[in-house]
Figure 1 (spheres, rainbow, N blue to C red):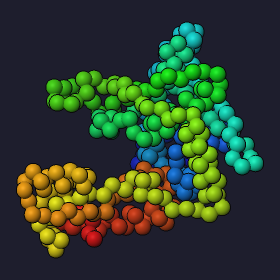
Figure 2 (cartoon, rainbow, N blue to C red; figure 1 turned 180 degrees about the vertical axis):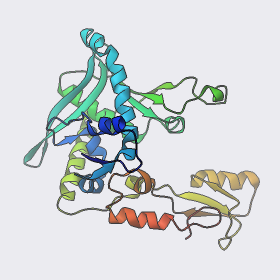
Figure 3 (spheres, one colour; figure 1 turned 120 degrees about the vertical axis):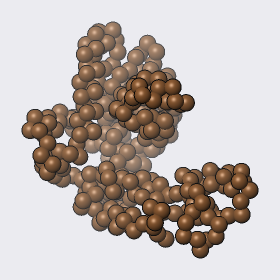
Figure 4 (cartoon, rainbow, N blue to C red; figure 1 turned 60 degrees about the horizontal axis):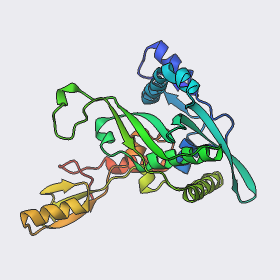
Length: 296
């Protein structure tokens, strides 16, 4: 990976980013790469990245380094710790090598745990769909390697947790949360794996567009007195919440769906600087009205 340092970060930090120890050990696809949008996966290969875009990844790696302190003892007790598991998946007439890195698995309880760094606001939405898919792939590989998986969880380390907000209704009591993750059955997750391999292989021949879900496009729903109005009474994240507000206030109003920012295209996707679709999405969100919402 080629790393630039446009913001002048300290040299040791940049070197640590350059020395990323990650390896897929020769697998065709990993649990993480299967979740990637096929378009982004193709466009982001062999890209030069800036160190400033790698801080979250670096901090995530440091979390695992800290947890390795207990790894040796846990392994001696029979746990599976920081181990990459493999399986061969047939798609048509071809076999693909699939792998997943298991953070921690307790064979005695059949409990699969995955450690993640995240924010408090993001933790409130856990478990997310990607958590279910990622851990379900891990569980399937464990099963294929002779283990029984009964339960799964994400262990969330909250990077922005503060004691100043303790006591606020719904605020986490400490900086670590364990959230149960529902697992997808073996037949269904194998079908999903096959479909994702097909999508990624097809992208090598013809580059697809990313879907709204892959772009993390989040529309908003504006409650307005009339369609012709320029200013909304209130704006909500869902049509249901907007409709409930109208009913509660006994308003005569309409609900207008406004296009949302493509958050992945604009902020996170590694291919965002070379992706033509992403550039168009960025251009769209730059045109906003007085309330800060996208003009229709």
